[in-house]
Length: 137
Image 1 (cartoon, rainbow, N blue to C red):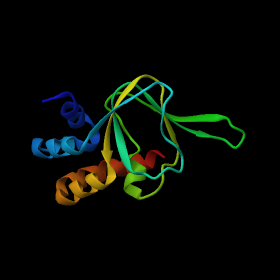
Image 2 (image 1 turned 45 degrees about the vertical axis):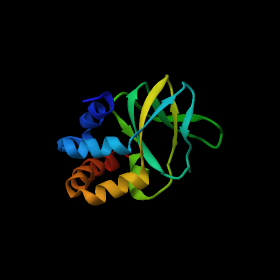
Image 3 (image 1 turned 90 degrees about the vertical axis):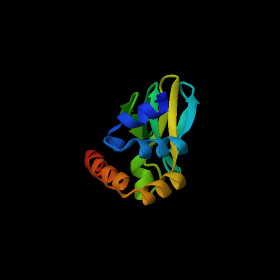
């Protein structure tokens, strides 16, 4: 099992999925290297996919009208982010910036939506996890 597949298999969104479904997810995954300080997405951008951190750290933040930054969450290795906007069909509600050199796994929305429509067990597992995440925000 390679690094990307190993990471995908350990995140809560995909816990317990059979290996063939994990491999299908890996096939649509795009690996990205992000520099420290690089903006990954901005508030209002289209939710065109979501990310899993393979290495590094990412902060999710908003900026007040006065220009003051408010950090909402800091994510580290093995954690997904941006998935709520993707599955609600809304724009990203905040900004994401790498706070360290980072390696991300990007799952494009069109490919991922097609994949989950073909795999009901994947859909059900993700719904359970997303409902818990939505309650946090």
